[in-house]
Length: 125
Image (cartoon, helix red, strand yellow):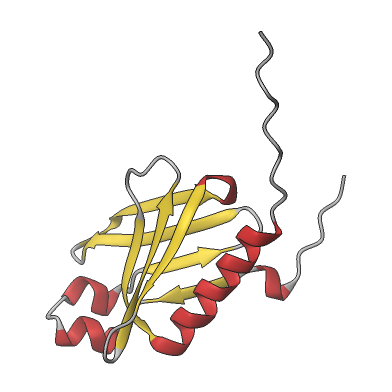
């Protein structure tokens, strides 16, 4: 079984360093938060504190567990929220440039619409 990987299959965004500077967030200025989407799911990488860059959170959400992708538009930067079907611990990234955020959200929504939905079998009693 072979899998072909194309350049359009992998898309990523990161928070803006200018946004981090405006919000006085030194950690995100040095290590911007990143969110990546591919054919498997959505992943988020974020460094917790600038003095300890080895301490970071790496979260992953498979496409089958994504319930909704929310795009919150701001004046200059946007926020992306990827919610799971369980409702706990959504993946959130703030300070994303508007064009990148729009393209990322559209890409993930297209991926969700492509995934085949298996119909539920009625319960026989």
